[in-house]
Image (cartoon, rainbow, N blue to C red; front, side):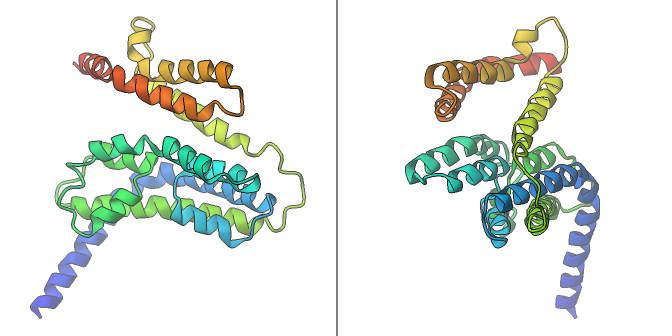
Length: 253
């Protein structure tokens, strides 16, 4: 009887956390399903089997890298180049991990799954969320992570399924990747402030990314600028990390 009470209490904790966190994941659901469907469609129209978009969506689970995988798998495969690209595209997760050390501490078996599923949007929700009083934070973080992954995998599966019936030309649909990064840039720009005064100081990360990408494109060309630009951006942000942090603290006061 005592064991049943413990299990029942655990289920209630999990259910309460699910109800509490679900509304916060609705914006992620809207974006992930749309992008996931687009990814599934691109994979199918590139000639890949039905199951591959679902598998890669679940295993790789890095939206930007998965879109790049369509081109990588469809062209001559260079393992070292693919590995370097994947590392540079996912390098930002190193900082996510450092930021979530305290929040994900003492989460038991859930910790490994939380680390694996820390996408950009999941990080944003879990890092910024105020877990309501009485809600188990471990279950809260777990449900956010699981729901977001389900949205992405579900979208990719839908795209792969409907991709079988499409007969029109899908050329240009991969522009959604460019559009997604533009939206992320604009959202970050707005978050860091829209004041005209002190514009350069408020937007050092965004300006660094744009400037480094433009410079590397000029130096290395449109086909080979991605990795050098990621390396340059990472190096510059590490160099200017303290001034950026000090500026944000100043703005918050």
